[in-house]
Image (cartoon, rainbow, N blue to C red; front, side):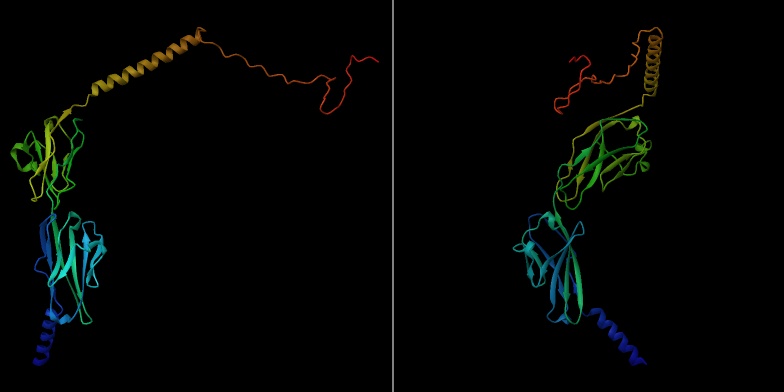
Length: 290
């Protein structure tokens, strides 16, 4: 019984270590236009295995990098296999994503994943900030950088003062009700008030270069002029009433032209002694004398 248990334990231990594929670089950070090594090693149990590298980009689209021991068309001249991994001679932002090293033989299969992060400094972000809004409305200010890698995080500033993501935790912002999503770059006011008027700008940063900011924009928050709207509606109704009364009065006094009675059109009838020359038919006229 003891020998049987030892045999099972030995088999489980063997299964755990056999056909093992590992990487010493699960995450590789490298600046754009520089070289990178993605490492992959495997145990001797595979013998002479088949080795492939696959790539999945940030949009989850997958392609082959190494097939049948050679780079595919899109990677020829850019990558090469070496003992212990895959080497890029120059990376671009399009190379961002996950690389899977797959090792297989007739005896087993294993794989290891390496994440490649190509570092690209942020560019000047595109900010959308309205210049004038009315109180009580939901207002969203947006900020986005299309170049930064890894993806940027965003900070908003009002009158050159940084805004916290959760204003309820700071006494200076206890009367504010905005929210900030540092990943999407959105600054949202559920119900904006006149206290939110000010100069706003956003900063994008990702650690790959100096943070970049958009130009500040002054946003004015104004009360909704309900009195003016009501007065405009009343004036419009009065104008329509006066126009209707004027038309009725003019019609009653006969100032408007009356519609002429239409007479039925008389149908043309040829005379009884009409001669149709084309038909060659002759009809005797009533005044014809022999």
